[in-house]
Amino acid sequence: MHVKDIMSKKVISVKRSTTLHQLLKLFDRFHIFPLVPVVEEDGKLIGIVSFKNLINVFSPRHTEIVKNIPFVDEEDEDIFNVELTKEMGSLILVADIMETHFVAIKEDESLEKAFGVMKLYLKEEIPVVDNKGVLVGMIGVFDIVRQLFSQKGII
Amino acid sequence: MNSILSLGFILVAGLLSAKVIKKAKFPAVTAYLMLGIIIGPSILKLVSGEVLGASSLISNVVLGIIAFGIGENFSRENFRRVGASVVWISILEACGAWILVTLVFLFILKQPFYISLLFGAIASATAPAATIMVIREYQSKGVLTDTLMGVVAIDDAWCLIIFAVSLAISQAIFAHIIDAFSIFKVFMQSVFNILGAFILGGAAALALSYFSRFIRTQTELLIYTLGCILSVIGIALWLDLSVLLANMFLGAVLVNSDRSAFKFFESLKTVDPPLFLLFFVLAGANLELALMPKLGLLGLTYLVVRVAGKLSGASIGAHISHATSVVKKYLGWGLIPQAGVALGCALIAKGDFPIVGDMIFTTIVATTVVYELFGPLCTRYALHKAGEVATEHTK
Image 1: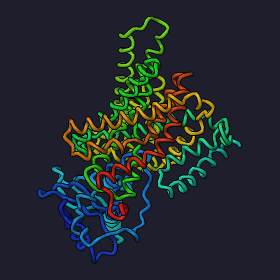
Image 2: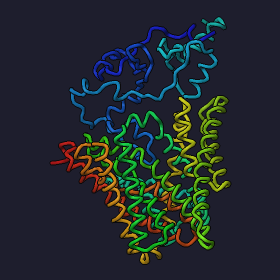
Image 3: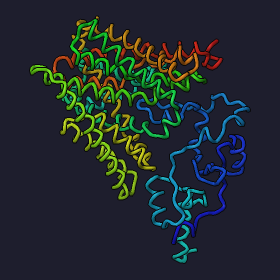
Image 4: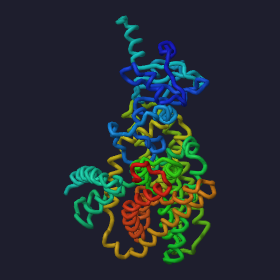
């Protein structure tokens, strides 16, 4: 069995130009913020936005460049006292907060491989791409576990 | 105090001192270094001799990890992100300090060429922690802030290259100082040292990437990455190659050849903070205060000329790359702090050159304290002048 056989094909994705306001609005009925794939116009996967990246809105200088510099002190994010204005909802774009170093898996990989990748990177779900790098779905640990339960006749 | 108690004390006291100094808006590295000087053999004598004796081991391990991390910044993606202007400015400000300090030490202070070259090379380093802390504190925004962030992110890589070249030349001159001075021998030894480090780092990166397919968990990944870095450090020391360059090339080749290379760098972030703390405290503890009075003129000259080199180099780089006038005028003032990489290079010099090494190391530790205390003030001045400080702080 392959990733494409059990992955979720209906995926909410965003563009680089999606604003913070639009992004939050998409998930305002969710009780957790999911892993959101970021795609180009042609559907190519170029990044992800996770809850961790969303928190970075409170520390605007935590860019990818700073992450790689040695000895830089961690910033104490006092999220209750950060000045956030209403305009920031439309000024902050997905491109400003997305992560470009991410892990994805190809649709024709095995479930064992997908499970191994998620275990190694400590992820509960990852995006699925085709051979051209176009986003085609998402797969999570739960999808794989559910499949195993199903095979054993438990569900 | 026994060694284990000494290590425990260093870690706890380091953490506390960082928390205290943070109130005064200074980075943790300044606290670690000052703590080291206070608890070291020159003042309170609270660090056991065994721990001090292990300084060289800890420094080599930490320097390998630092250089590996600096290699991560050497990616095509990062160069594209910061832009050509930042790359030029960073090269020229590093070279500016290198050349100016070398020339002044050689011709005005009449120091031997190999000593001048080492001081010059160490002068090319900057310390991003203090600069980034000021940027965060002021929530500054603008072209100067962006350029400064880009420059401090990549310039340590140039420093490592400059230091490796200078060290190779200095070692070669030092080794042949009794014989007739042979330029060819010096050149060949330098080339061997640098090329060897590149081959070692590159080959190790390809092996690290290839065999990582057998890694299944985060724990295995951390052990594997650390094991590879230590092996590269060990082989570099064994073959007399540059530890710094070999590990920087390990990181650089890895990040440019393996799309999932970020996993190796991420895994190390769980172990490096206590190692970095130990590195800085031990660097401070190794300072010989008794040597300080003898270094007055040398230290003072280094302090002033390095700043002049940074300012002029940054300004020339900004002119060449057609940067805006605020960048041309004020960028250099954000590049004054000096810490981890400079201390690391000084420790290597201390290990490689028995007598002059102590003098170089003491000068660098003492000037680091001055730069770390005054550097943030210079960065604040630059950001104010450029009008990039958020309004509430300018009132």
